[in-house]
Length: 103
Image 1 (tube, rainbow, N blue to C red):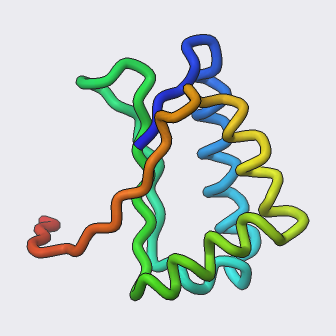
Image 2 (image 1 turned 135 degrees about the vertical axis):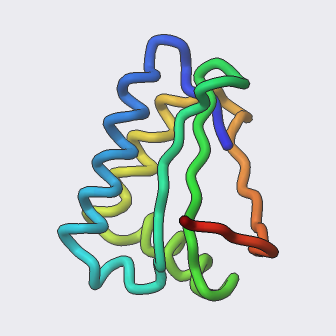
């Protein structure tokens, strides 16, 4: 969860789409990621965003985050991203799925 700076909401949408595009273009760099969703709050915190990264284990999460900080192409995402959000608003939530439904 994080909050975009008021004048940077469109830029956050663009960077989420950039990341999703990188995942499609370079699946080998994201082999630990089972799925990814970038979501914008429709009702709730204005300017709020949520990203859901599905991985098999915490170790896989650590691996992908390490790549995001060291891979020459991937590290451009956090470098741009952190300029666009309200300082202190970003945090990770590690969750476990306990129920799921898909019609």
